[in-house]
Amino acid sequence: MSIEHEQRKYPRLSTTSRVYGLRFRAKGVDVQDCRLVNLSAGGCGVEIQMADARNLEVGDVLEALYLDHPDMPLVPLSAVVLRMLGKVPGKTLGYVLVGMEFRGITPFVRDLIADHVAAQLARE
Image (cartoon, rainbow, N blue to C red; front, side, top):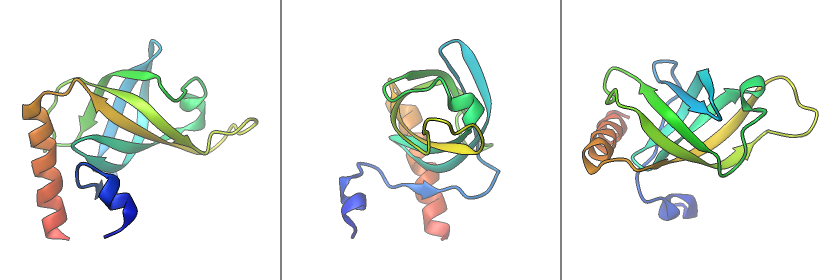
């Protein structure tokens, strides 16, 4: 078991297909074109186009966050940005990898996400 895995509270699913999408609002701006790269009941990792990430900072709260997948609950979530990789001064193209932690999520919704992740991991 890796140290990274031991530090995580929930199992994490790598979501390499475009079947998983994500959209949210940050600082009054809607961000639509995101690619979910991993998901857990506690949060997710997302690739965001540099143009959409230029005003994002660690600690920002993301609102109206939706996990776009048929098996995910279609409810607005909230998350906070924990880390950003690839955002450097002068970079204008490409993506930024953003690590988010869900906030204020109900136990029911958290369990739905956890059950989905567990089911997908069992198939691997």
